[in-house]
Length: 153
Image 1: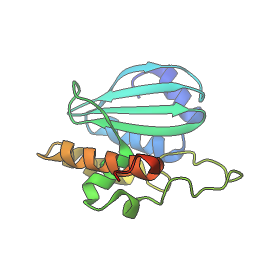
Image 2: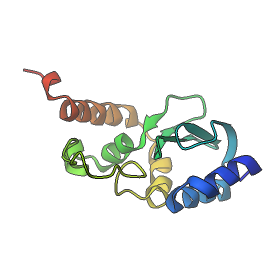
Image 3: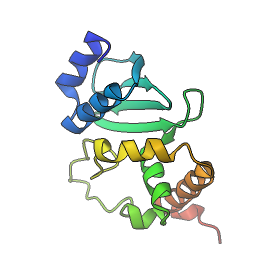
Image 4: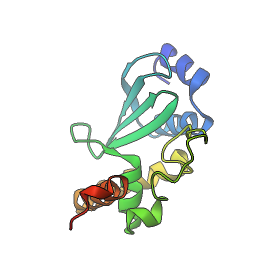
């Protein structure tokens, strides 16, 4: 890591897969660009390389967003995973809302996806033509699943 304060924060709070992902980023030319916040109620670290990687923790849930270039819009990782798969969002991720109110929330999103295993492929794929269209399609599908009343009639 590039900053002892960020390193201490990540070592103290981040799940192993998040730490492994950051180690991979640093080993592959990404550098810490910025950070804000210092607790698991709300913090963000940004790594820059060929792409931009934003890691956010909010209320102890870790999330990942990727921009194809440092100056581009970032997309949520679940949308990128579904778009890269080329399958409907619901086939890649279970229907939102199927979790019981008493079940604990996942520590890392998307639930069940290893960032360390999937991020390298996403970073290569996100540079290709047509990614924005695929991500927009995945976003629309997810929106219709999460808010069924918005489905076209």
